Image 1 (cartoon, helix red, strand yellow):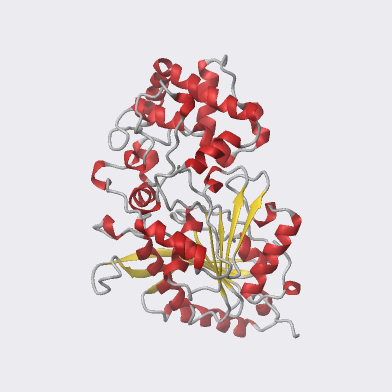
Image 2: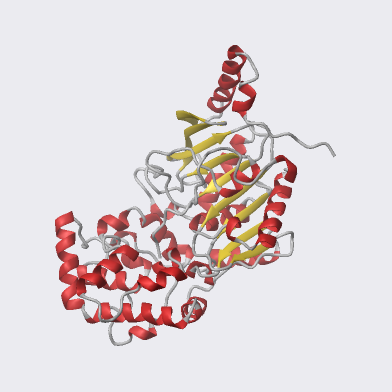
Length: 456
């Protein structure tokens, strides 16, 4: 079988005259500019590719396409109009100044990449904002319109990817528009179809790694709460010096303190490893040692009004549709001052608090289990978010777990046989024979792990 040769645009341009190169470059820009509602904000040349920041006009409510609109920000990493396209959904906002970077599937496939900023993360927010328009269907329809528009430029197959909330976002898009892409690879994507049933998370914290590390983390949380009268004044003083407040969301420094302590073990396992167990302070640690270690792991500034504001779209979606982990914290019985604190509504201003609707996640879970084709899930063994996984269907769908990995689990962290199987499957979905690409050497572009989140 003849191999399809994937050649970057930059490589082609080195073989042609400057006049032809300029014409090819103009042709792409003209194709993009011809798409109704799409604007080129900027272009940054990079080795072996071109990088655009784009803006696409979207209806604020897709049920009323003739109504209010907003500008959704996205980026395009272009290699070739015939190469596969990776649709990267981070689930959050893009960087304030986006830079060229590629996801793992993009590197494995030598693909183009379209990265989409999730609606309601600034600046991709309607003004005025009707927060009831922040739903998984509305965002999926944003992405659907983008894919359909760019298929006028790209003839290759499409693969969607995302990590954490971005992985969830990629699943929801596939649920509503299953024909938009040819495959999905979702990294560390939690699945919470029964929001009140969170025993999977409690089992995780009862069994992860070894008992001595688990006990040390529980002891740190308990000891911090016992020293509340000494540690909260430190938090208040630091917040005052930095201009941070607690009035719009959690309500007080004391409540912020407790939320941060509750998050300590979760955040440790989300971003750290077994090797970091040695850094956990003993119960005999000084106040400064205890305070500084928690600051390094969680960050005392996160649960302030200023730290939370960026994440309001996530917490709004969690309380209304996505669900959230609700841990028992049995080891902290008698030490917690606010038993109902560990809930996303408490991280939002009062005007954004809404009831939870369980139907969307139940629907998505059932569809993934029974009807979803060509979907791949990659999880980390030591990642708390991986404690409640998606169960894929038998329609060429797969799940892999990276041993010892945290929330940064990816194909590279799988066992060699699993990594080979996952890579082969991804290339097959994308129509790329294995001989045409070499993992992670498509260009010198850095890998984007798509994990900007510091959420619960």
